[in-house]
Length: 245
Ligand SMILES: [Fe+2]
Image 1 (cartoon, rainbow, N blue to C red):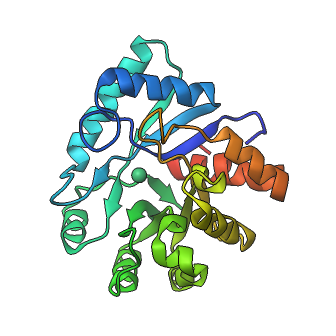
Image 2 (image 1 turned 45 degrees about the vertical axis):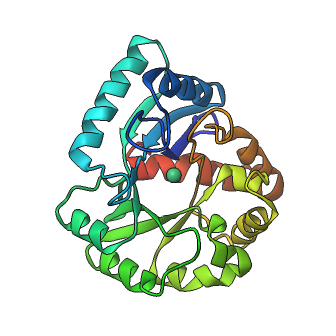
């Protein structure tokens, strides 16, 4: 993969009307235009799957992604979109996984990659057991924005057992720029310093407060750790997960 390859965003909420992201197609198209303007060429659509709150499932998400790609093509917006989901960890979501109604981001080195969200308040006591059950089934959790988890913000070492188990980490670009406050910024850079981060993504929901921007975060990472690390986190690893690399 060359330095000119576009940025690939593995976490965003563009699909309209199925979670707290875009509210209608026009908003979704505007989010896609903003992503393209920021240098993003491919985005995984990762609506929440949160039983009782956002009851999304693989078959429905696939239909939405296909329709959205057609709308992007129709409007001449050069963004490739792929199916995914942000699964909230719970007993119900485990059942949904077993029923094969949760889309994976892709497969990498023999393991399916699942974007997994824990409650923001903290890592639940059963969290580690939950990720072991996934790993036993050939699923590698890519933990969404650990730097925004209150327990991790208080003590970044709280994530270590998850790393030791084999989880990967997705840090949100805005956290690196201080857009979610000082504590998550500090945690994000501490994880970066440990080279514990596998992917940086936007977690975009809207144009106002959570836009689909990654270029500024890429530049901040490149300034601190060099172009090579930035390429890996924003382009190469995401491309490999989607099967593009
Ligand atoms: Fe998200």
